[in-house]
Length: 239
Image 1 (cartoon, rainbow, N blue to C red):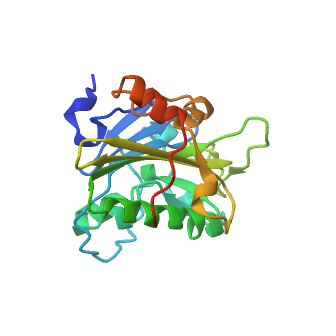
Image 2: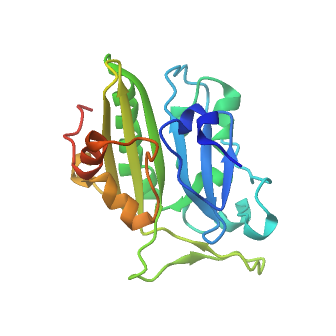
Image 3: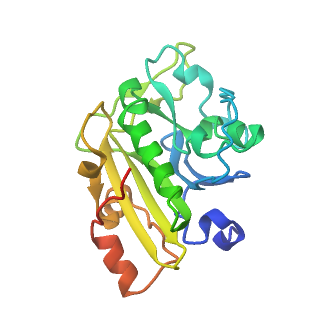
């Protein structure tokens, strides 16, 4: 049985999933039903020596073949293989960067979204991580499916029975541990589309994501202050 306290990334909580994939520098909760990451949890790296991106996209053979997505599902689809744990967040060593290119860390993302507003949010999180009074930043990201809408799927040309559904939205919940010991939380929900809006327009209460996705976030944190933090929208940091 998995005990979240074994991994530093999960010291403040780890949602459930069909399969938990423990990597060297981040943890993934994988969904067999959606054939993609349900959530990905990381501590943003402070090393930032900026090794070259490996671009080593590859299947994760820890996942049973029946539920696994391979590169063939993405080829010719028009969708990016969108990182949930960003390569730029884990680039102190080549192996660390390469690990983020496992397809278990990917969801199909529209190019304008992946390389636009989602990338801006990733960069803003790194800015938060580099603030003088911040000790560590924990991030959990994942897809959201709206069952009131038609779900688009990606199908391969090799007659594979596996269909890869395209998320309608994406979420990112950010937990910053200050050097004072204080914990501050910001959560975002973004429609899966290009946007020029400022990032603070996507802020939502953390409880909003929990209801939408059906998961507990930061569940090892308890008490009235945490309940208030999860229910409110904190003013965004400068980025």
